[in-house]
Image 1 (cartoon, rainbow, N blue to C red):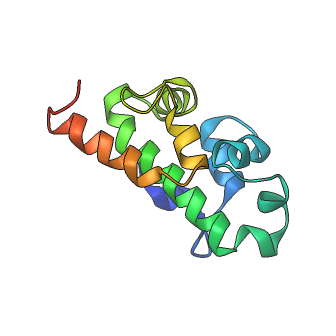
Image 2 (image 1 turned 90 degrees about the horizontal axis):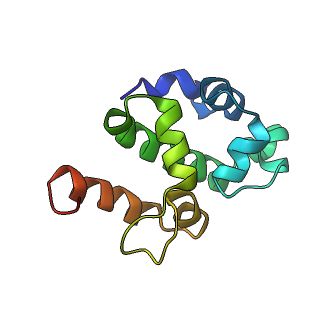
Length: 117
């Protein structure tokens, strides 16, 4: 786990700070959260409820999965590329894009409880 405050700026999730930690661009962060480029480039869009919710969901999933993979970068790679069993081959990123972040978090809780392998 990591300190989610490292991703914040004045009480909001800051795409640039997330991107820095993930060693990528803010546009890539936007895409990974199911957002358009404008959502992370225009100040009024960064602070919108939708943008903040999507960034929060992505950060929550990364925070919960980082201990399993040993690093934030490995968790990010898993988030973007690893299909989850029982979700028709969709990755966590694809599920977040379709508004199903809670299902990813529930899946991770089930894995932690030993229900899924």
